[in-house]
Image (cartoon, rainbow, N blue to C red; front, side):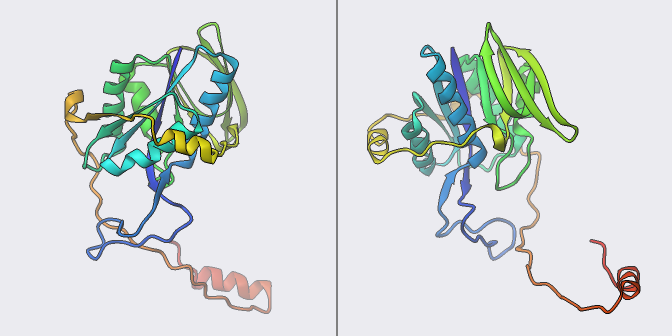
Length: 249
């Protein structure tokens, strides 16, 4: 059995980012990048499934620039068997990411695609759903529990109404939520070993995929966190303020 885990390279959430001078993109000068935290949860779960079934192969894939290799080596240090970098300098929207992943899946023939429900930079939450639609595979989203047996996945997924249980035949696309697990930390020894492992590279064009942008970034801004606090003497005054002065964005 083979599990494919797509990953995304995102700006480190613990640092401040700013827009470029023209306000059309994020200024990446001096910005450090990390694997998307939701994708690390997917990798961790794939590794746990492999621990229960030694025949499972875990393959991670990233789509992006040459420097993406560093983040892919993090997945190797965690324990992934192989890593594949689809090289492109283009910024791909979720539809084009799904198109690239579809080509990778046709090449790798995995039994399961396990991926983060969203990326923390754009929070689109679309790539997994697009991918399942393009493959015509069953899908489950926002899962908090998974078990694999007899060619099927039994999952619990988080919904606004509570936990929903379901079963779906493999191959399938499954996106993971925060409460599924706690990703492991790679030891220094594992990190050093990962530096020697090969990362396979393939150009986006060599997969037969041509990017067709469907989203245009028109502007990026940093919102102010300043607050205008006022002390009011009564509930009636509060109601008047809310009715007459509050601005609904």
